[in-house]
Length: 563
Image (cartoon, rainbow, N blue to C red; front, side, top):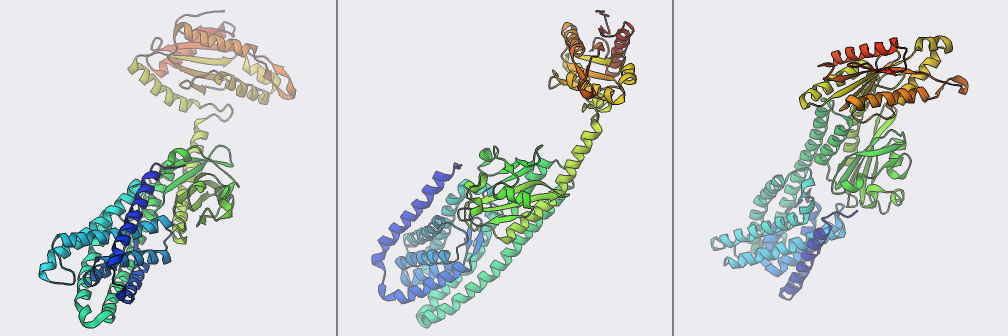
């Protein structure tokens, strides 16, 4: 499975990395190697800033811009680019947040290009390095603006293919927090550059620790925001379930609310099919929807099937290294990180939810807990929905024959007749009654009679079309409503049914066969009646005539036809 964004994502990533390497090589001769010690201290501070960075789906926030602007004013553009690149690659390499190597390299290239672009903007506006003065105000504003714009533009391009699926805070939220960060880091960076000539690196170092303290506070606040998002997801799920939606809608809502609290690439929710150990996709989210729609989960097979069997949620940190996923299908083939959670209720596993992301270590125990809670909420609602459907099936169907009962038939038939009246097409009706069925029961017993009724119901249903309505009308009577059937065609259907019943060998206990015949009363809407009640009465009169004539015949309400 390869999503459409693959080529764009790959090309953008490596183009940024190559451009950044080219810029670093171009600027290396301009570095003052006598300042290597101080620059390494700044790199170390940058690594600390990266370690405490606040992660967002659209990027990261840190106080490193304080170092960027101070380094630019003190040491120049070459040192700024190299400090930015080294601090990022070492910082994100040590504090890897589940990002693959390509993402780490992209982030490094992104900051290098942003620093270089900011330097160009500074000089284009007539700025002079080393001066924090009023004449440098416009160039410093241009420096900051260019750095912010290039940073956000590159992140936007990198995440463009999957931007629609981003959870947590929206782009406006990220820009808001980014703006507040720059509101503090820019003045502090200028202050570091101003005091450096007087207090040296030690004083600048102490001042920068206030930036790290600000990051810690921001990090704590964002965690509160994320927790609020998680609680909102639980609340919205609970509120949605109060509306008693169907099972599929419930599973779709689980994936929707999970995305609000967790960043994932693709997900699928499977629901148990008619076969007890088979689970089919009921809700899918992400670019692999088409491929996942043809997958299935079987109890005990692979990691997903094991979760179904064990009824315990699991987290896979890296599918390439975990032996449980090496031979698995579905998302395990294309995702590095997985969360698999069952929907358990009433001692049964009703379904299973699978979330996947292409990054290793993308999920943690907190994410697993969120999905498990969402699935627990959904499981109760799904069980209620299943029980409601089963109860409705029982109440609307005849237990002996499996056909819908007459009360359900009457409701559906009335709607069908109304539609036929508005559209102007006919509806044919057949009332089928077993000849001398009372004598059959007296001779062979009630159990044998019930076996005949069940077998006759299957015979009547055999050639039914999708739109035909068939119900058990009474003790030994069946009613068929056939949209579009009239005249000779309707008579032909009735005659064919009568002959098939007469020639069919019905089974009794012990393998003995018996023969029966039926009488059929035929009526047409709107020719014989203008509503369902009149149609049934017309058909009943025709059926009574067929019975009075000796049975085993078809009689129409308008014209009696005797075999």
